[in-house]
Structures are given as C-alpha cells and as structure tokens.
Amino acid sequence: MMAGSHIAIPTILKIGKGALNDLGTYLANAGMHNAVIYFGNGLIDMFGAGVMGSLKEKDIKVLEYRELDTVNINDIIELAFNIDAKAQAIVGIGGGKVIDAAKYASYLRKLPFISIPTSSSSDGFSSASASLIVNGRRTSVPARMAYGIIADTEIIKSAPDRFIYSGIGDMVSKITALYDWLFESSNGYSEMNDFAVMIAKKAVNSFVRTPFETIHDDLFLKELLDSLAMSGVANEIAGGSTPTSGSEHLISHALDKMLEKPQLHGIQVGIATYIMAVVQDHRYVRVNAIFEKTGFWDYVSTLDLKREDFAAAIDMAPSIKPHRHTYLHEQQYRDKAKEVLYNDEVLKKVFD
Image (cartoon, rainbow, N blue to C red; front, side, top):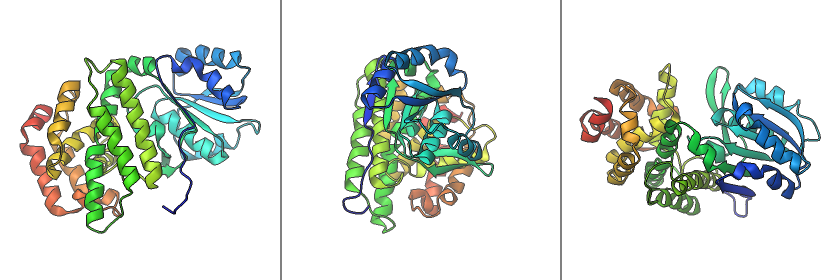
C-alpha cells in the first residue's frame, strides 16, 4: 500500500443492546436526511415499524423502502441507477444477501452505506467486498467499507444458533489465515502488512479469550461482532483479504462450488480452520477448545457432513486462488490435511 494512502474505517460504529432503535439519531447526527432502506427477505414485518418510527422521529425522509432478495449483479446495477438523486445514504438491514446488494449499490452510486446485520454469520457486514452472482457464479467483487455499522445484540441473539456458530467459525479462522500469510510472505510470495496483522490478531485473541456462560451472553456477542468488524478494517489496511482469509477459506469456497447445498460459510470455514491449524501445527488446541466450549462441534456433528467432500475441496483449494501461496498450494500439506481429515480424533466426532 502506498505511503499516505487513505484507509476507510466506519465513521459510525454502534454495537450493543437496542442499537437499531437509535438509527434515526445516528443518521441525523451524520447529516443524512434522505435515506434508501433495503431489508432482507421477510424482515420488514419484523423490524420495519421500529426503523420507520426511529427515522420519522428525526425527520429523516425515506425515499425508497423495500425488501431485496437478489445478489445478481445485473439486478443490483439496475437498482443502483434508479435510486433517487436526493439520496444521502443507503441502509441495508438483514443477512449477507441484502448487505452485499446494498453495499454494492452504494459503491456504484458513491453513497455512504450503513450496514445493519441481523445475524453474526460472517465478517461480510464489515468487509469492503461483496459476494454477488456474476454470469451465474458467485463472485467476490470490490465494494467499499461501510460508512456505518450498527449491530443490535438483541437482534443477533434472536437469530438461529447456526448463525452464531457460523460467526464463531469465521472469526476463529483468522488464526490460520494469518499463519498462511506468514508462510506466503516467508516464501517470497507476498509482503505482510504489520499493522493489518496486529489488528486481525487483536481481533481474534480478544474474542477467544472472552469469558462466557452461553453463546447468547451479551458480552460474548458484542465481542464476536466487534472482532468481526475489526477483521474488515484489517482487510482494508492490507488492501485485500489476506489477513482474514487463507487456506481454510479456499476449502470453503471449493465446497461452495462442488456442493448443491453448501453449509453456512462460517460453518465450513470453522471445520477447515481446525484441519489447517493441525496441519500448520499452530494453536489447534485453542481452536478445538473454543469449538468445544461454544458447542460448535456439537452443532456440526448433526449436519451429516461427508469426509469425501472435504477431501475433494482440499484438492481443489489451490485452483480457487492460484495467485496465492497458502499451505494448501503445496502438495505435501494437501496430503497432510487429508490425513488429518481421516485420522484426527476430534474430527471423528464430526464426521462419523
């Protein structure tokens, strides 16, 4: 990254209980009086009245208000260029789909994007890229870091547990991703950005050290969301996803391509993180401990996952990002990963 280059970080960052109720206040304080609001499928019924009340209270005009259920790039381009010229902000409320669509629309129109996730399933709500359907295939396209992130822990808590487990898997993956980046850098394939490494490391360490009774604890969920938000900032500093996405993500992307019905992103990534932590011989005891204590392993053992799918994904992994050089880009480590997959005692609970 060039010296003195501009790094975007969210101007509004509100994570906590009841945060969504103050949406109107946050927008008004930022001088945004005309907004476009996109909801995920079925979410107007759940959150519409509260959101509209909060905006009305602060005299914020809603120029467009609808549910979005597409991540097809052509639909979003059409949507973006039909947005009223008076719009000062685009607000996306929901899961990954609507966040990605709203994020890309705001990128095309150069408007501030307010990201309001209703689940903690991944760090997508804070990342500067969007996962869209391009020519029939899911593809990561450049977008922009959210101007604002507003995450209400009460709403996150009410989402099904699988979304919390997915977020846990995606967060813990920073352990193996950072080790892959170190491996890549020490082999001369890329250069590490020390500040991005520090942010990503602090994010994951803060999360895995959080004391909790259950995954629904307010502090636990706030730490999870804070750490996922910090991951997006680490990527922004690095100018790419290397601090937060390594070989474990390649396995998940390969599964997405192969399987008719893939699991949630963070579920696949979490399992792959444990496999790669053992391969890297780095912090796998910690990864296993957090997965045991949170109930992540108990949940994934109910999913009827197939070892053969993960084995095929390990083989396919290097072709997902041929320009990278993670552990899985070398045959010896792919062999080791498959050995772990078939013989590791912890994984026997997951796959048998």
